[in-house]
Image 1: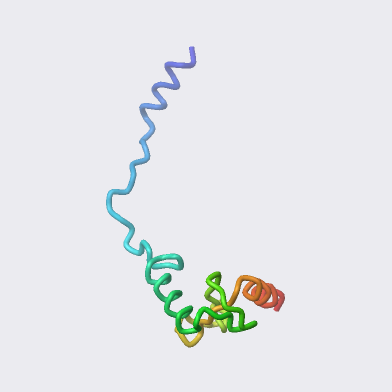
Image 2 (image 1 turned 60 degrees about the horizontal axis):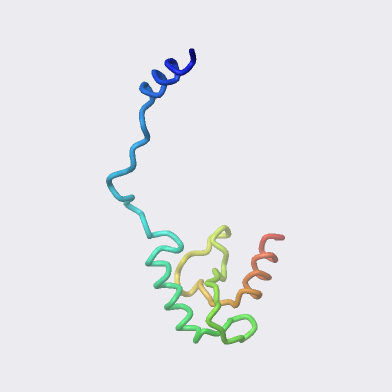
Length: 97
């Protein structure tokens, strides 16, 4: 009978226990609280205006002027507000390079 063997295997397996301590870097990446604050600050600085087409909208994305993969930073001087269509177009152009 296979069930007794299965039961002994299940008893021998260690259950996965949840982490009790919080992750040390939780909320620090993009999407974390510091990033959201920076995003809000840049959009306010740019007066909620797309820096590419001049469109005023609440649906803006934060863009790295010099892409991080090419050595850009998260410094405020390297960030700009772009509307979704302009950000999408810029990202596509950068991916072709």
